[in-house]
Image (tube, rainbow, N blue to C red):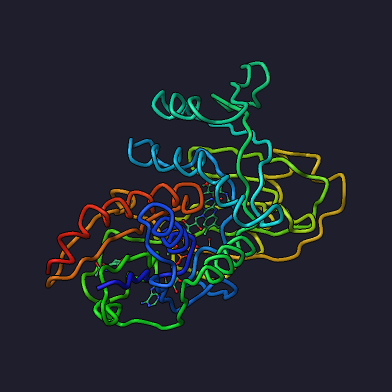
Length: 341
Ligand SMILES: Cc1cc2nc3c(=O)[nH]c(=O)nc-3n(C[C@H](O)[C@H](O)[C@H](O)COP(=O)(O)OP(=O)(O)OC[C@H]3O[C@@H](n4cnc5c(N)ncnc54)[C@H](O)[C@@H]3O)c2cc1C
Ligand SMILES: *[C@@H]1O[C@H](CO)[C@@H](O)[C@H](O)[C@H]1NC(C)=O
Ligand SMILES: *[C@@H]1O[C@H](CO)[C@@H](O)[C@H](O)[C@H]1NC(C)=O
Ligand SMILES: CC(=O)N[C@H]1CO[C@H](CO)[C@@H](O)[C@@H]1O
């Protein structure tokens, strides 16, 4: 009983493999990542390549998620150090505006750890905005970063295997100590136990070339989300978004949504227009949202240890490291039990 299986190779599965090595002392050669889609692939069933890639204030205000965010923000430097300077992860300035004050829990938590945290004076807020902050944030060039993280884990000895599972029981390869369920949105259709609390939140984004923009800016409205996110080490790519469309499985992209995105983002940050807009791509992605937020839980089913780590919604990059750390703590607590089975 020494293999550990991580089902899913999105950002959450990769963070989980990292945490198993660094916090549970599992030898990388005993870690098996099994996934239908791997870094480098693109599919609507694979959310991680589509993320904008900022650490922002969008995540919910419950104490668990606030702790996952904080863990991720304060520990990402370890991953950057292991992957090297040009890994698609870097720090950039950020401004966030809210039309409705996000609440003291959130602001007090952010204030306790965000670098260069400052409240924007009321006189400097755009019309309709109730509250704003500036800080230094983490930015990801998502598809590049997950490929780098995979390559690093592979070099250490982690095995990646492409396989689509139709039932979670197929994840239990011989001598398996535990399986981590990091299947994101994909597992809505995975039989075993179906979690009907999982639903997609669709988003459309534009990738444009704009090397002159090296800052983040976002505005959270009552019924819209507008954001501007530079991608580190990408040769000047900038993400413009976006949409948060609950329960919408549409994978097509729409011209009128792209127009709307350009209108809102250039209004929020007019200097985007200092150079003509060159659109490199338009994409739609499905955030793996979940009623009740992310599920980090250990379960013993038919004498087998299963640890859930999914439902990261719109914040898998920024909270996923903390989620995975918690999942690995549950593994450590339950492992003794499992090895006696
Ligand atoms: C437009 C958009 C913008 C976003 N912006 C940000 C952002 O700025 N910051 C941020 O933190 N987050 C952002 N997100 C959210 C982020 O992308 C997700 O939270 C994250 O990618 C979820 O990762 P995951 O590993 O849980 O799922 P996924 O990346 O979907 O990975 C799931 C994995 O499980 C595998 N899998 C599933 N089912 C099976 C099966 N049956 N058999 C085998 N393998 C299976 C898949 O193949 C895949 O490898 C954004 C999302 C979108 C759509
Ligand atoms: C694995 O995770 C998915 C959500 O991505 C969930 O729907 C499914 O029920 C989980 N599998 C099991 C066996 O619990
Ligand atoms: C999903 O989103 C698309 C694009 O915005 C829209 O055209 C479509 O009507 C939506 N579908 C549902 C079911 O809401
Ligand atoms: C580009 C983009 O999608 N913006 C994101 C900014 O950050 C939050 C979470 O960190 C995402 O959910 C937004 O979608």
